[in-house]
Image (cartoon, rainbow, N blue to C red; front, side, top):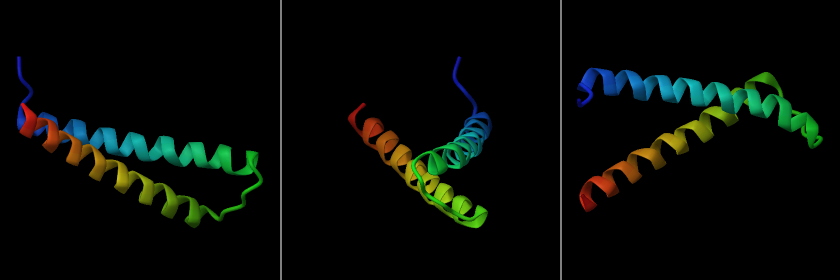
Length: 69
């Protein structure tokens, strides 16, 4: 059974939102553990930057594998 386009979109958005939350929570724990200080806004900015890079990487890999298929 294949997934509909709308369910694929919902899955992609959910994955991105959850990934961002995990990145933010990880930073909030990891930064102080290694002696780094950041404001809440800096944490949000950094985690959004890494999430954006992750989404682009995922998209490019999907397109590459689709081309190889």
